[in-house]
Image: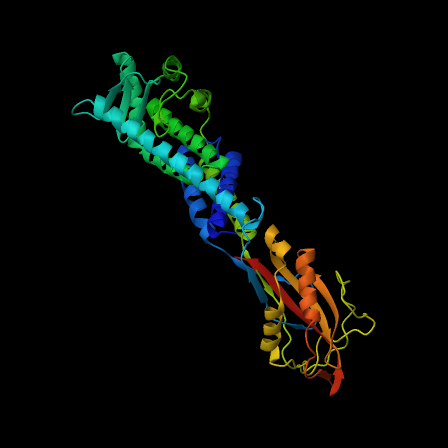
Length: 424
């Protein structure tokens, strides 16, 4: 899978995990500064943590039976008539859709910013950080360090609302919104980034409301002011809007809610096991194999019967070959010569190429006491055609020059070879 695609998926999963922590444990608290910090750190961590991969070890997926050879790579050019949703084309299609969305939302953000700049340049009050606008369906909002106020408001209403918007400017809320909008461009497909965006805007309003009410304004009068300014929509997604109708009910509740105690900050610890769990899920697993060297100081008895093969080419399993021996069988040219023979004589099936089928086939075979190849089977298959080709090429192996030895006596020994089929 494309590294970019893997990174995008990881970032989306981290965002989802952090949002679940916020939604379940933090969102109802009145510790607005903490909640704001958690949201911002969460979206930033979701960008950085996918770059960290913890390497772990897992046991092999099946027992090792005898000498395990190095992987043989068989490549072929795609014939160009692979089905649309097969193999690499699926990845290309996903990446194409991703970049199309990135382009669309990137252009949308630029247009939004350009619209704000246009309003500022047209209606800015000289000598003040105030923009008086008209024709926009909202009472007021703040952005770029300016307060945007609707010209239809009375001087009294404008003064009260500007006090609220000044709290947004004092807290630098615009930069939070701008950061989320940029991240949304790259994570446009992730519903949790939109939920974080909505939650951050809510926290901003809670903070501005709290600071406004601390100045001594009556809660009832302030709520009435908000209700009087509720309109249907707002123009710019990259601003804090005083009359955002989707937040009114929550703002009313939070204004009168009992303050959350400082010990509620301990809830932040809930994020630690979530991070650990996601890191573990995305850890890189490496298989630890215990490969047999050319000799062993310990004589091993015959292994227990191997698992039933997927398909046998020839031979019976009545005389089980050994797993470990004193001296391994010798192929002409050694292991390098053996792998070279398999590589040069394996053909990528045309039908498999046309279908875009790839994967690793692991073949097991025995080298008998006379050096011949017997008991050939597939331990891990991919597709009948690839499996058959792997079996075919192993069955054509010439005799080994020398058989394996155990206590100076010729014995049969197991070999395993992984054959990787890959399309360019």
